[in-house]
Length: 417
Image (cartoon, rainbow, N blue to C red; front, side, top):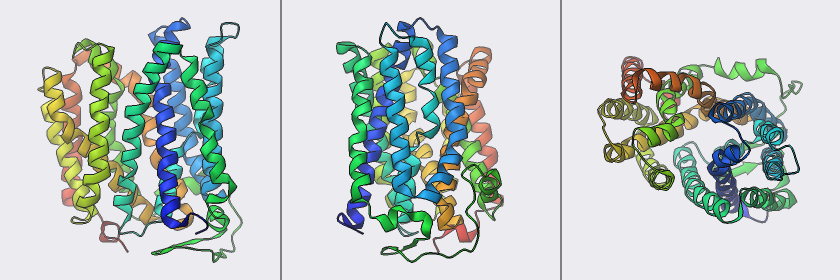
């Protein structure tokens, strides 16, 4: 495994993911204020959020194909370069002499290739056995929590003290650790994963796979959709999309709900999101891994859907932010269990050479919610209020739970091979 060894490469992957997510949440935390400073109203802000979601939705599967064909090191390189371009354009948008609004919308374009988390998931999936995979993927939740907490705090603090340009310039410098990756800390025979490197229980072997087939294009939609038609893949993917959509709509509207329904100011909303980040770090980083060693993935999937239903019913009855805080542990558990278990099951269901493409498809689920969320969530909120999100979550997940109970997950996906 080269100079770092298997554990060193895994640790470096976690560090890179945490660094990128910290910069990403720094950007998220100052975007509303930067948009207001440039004279954009809430409608225009929603447009640029939708553009970002659409680009990530379209770019996720393509990025996954690129990772499968060129390896994890090339995928990390592409993602970090795209991130640097986005932050550079955002920093330029803060300069009064430049067309800030045009640069703000242009900064959304590199978002199509910003997929560091799927690249990290691909590395973890390759370097872990099927039995270890749920726990290893769950530990990426620690990286997400670190990014959510420190990114939000750093973004707000630096923006308040030095203006919104400084956080973007600081994020643009984050590509330096990626240079270490490119200079050989990740061994070449593993980085060129597309040559046919097979994952083993103890690591990786550099024995090529001679498939005898011509290499498909990165933009080959048939090769992407083919994965969804493999046995057992489409049902699990639909569960991931359908169960995640109701809570995704609520989270898209959360900034409005926190102001109008919970009556929170910006600082209080930040504290609430930090609490969310801490819960995610603990549950996804520590709890999910231990549960996966005692229960099958099918059982954990049904448990997450069941808890989603119960939390949805309680959300329909909540009246203040204290009630929401009581619901957050169950909500975070359901989110973490659903994402980790479905990602693990889907990567086991496809061949090693298609792991990146499958993770790219999984990464497109959240951008799909961000694309539909502002319109659909806003319509529901304006017409029926906050309780409608709980009613929809309960109804959708209860139906999915009945389907899973009647038609359990196939055993070949339910247990590691």
